[in-house]
Image (cartoon, rainbow, N blue to C red; front, side, top):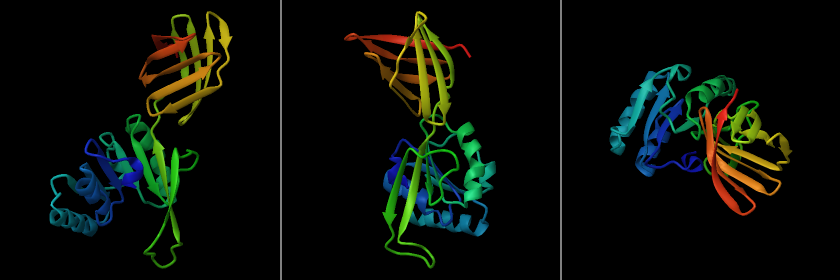
Length: 227
């Protein structure tokens, strides 16, 4: 799960339903990250703390007894989840509201309803538990910026429709529609192209700023949210 998220020393990992603490301990010991494990089982939280002490990472792998739905996620850059489907779905609005654009969510076995994962990975299981199959699937989502709306920059007008990370962009220049063939949103990074032009930039609250390339020329451009 941590490898799929590309975890590293720059990350703060929150594991929801952390069990014996192995994910957060691995994040600290193998990937150099800091992390928090959350579980409602006091015995497992105490076990996790002891496991972190034994692994020599108790200062970077912290465990708390807490309801996952009451946990502040705003600090996390990576969230790992191995919970029942109903709880995974209940977490979805919280994840979107509290995590910053570009934060990564990795779920084991159960995807979130209605939100298409950015990547999936199927692994062969060498040590199976009773009733478990030969394979396990991991799902990765990258939290998208809120790009939906009407944006204006100079003579340009953008209308962006959004469904999670999937976007459709309509563009006008001086009142003339520009045919776009491609549009992509990953975290806060946005790109669209068509009709001999391309744009790459970032969504930052009420601004989209980046570079527009057209007719062999590249120029900076910024769009402000109209609504």
